[in-house]
Image (cartoon, helix red, strand yellow):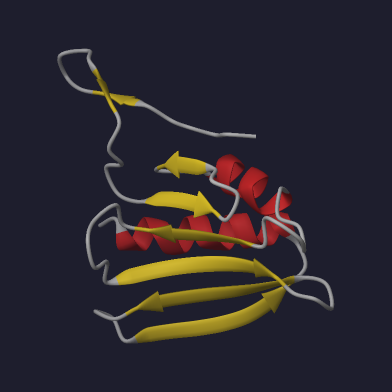
Length: 113
């Protein structure tokens, strides 16, 4: 499943660049400025064979922060949040897609300010 989101400019023309950040899965799914629902769907689509991770980061060269969700062999997900400007590096293990998507949405909102 390919998930994409297009914004629009004040002139009504579609824009393709993310305003704040984008999410990319190992299988090629890409979402600009993903909502909590879009993050949930990306995480829900992860598996242990050909789509093992999703990375969320600013849509720019050499980003200063990122978050990732990866499938663990023993079940659940490893969630990594790193922000070099705030000296944050957090690694957790979680089993609930809802909780991961909600927590990431809140964490991402703080990056966009």
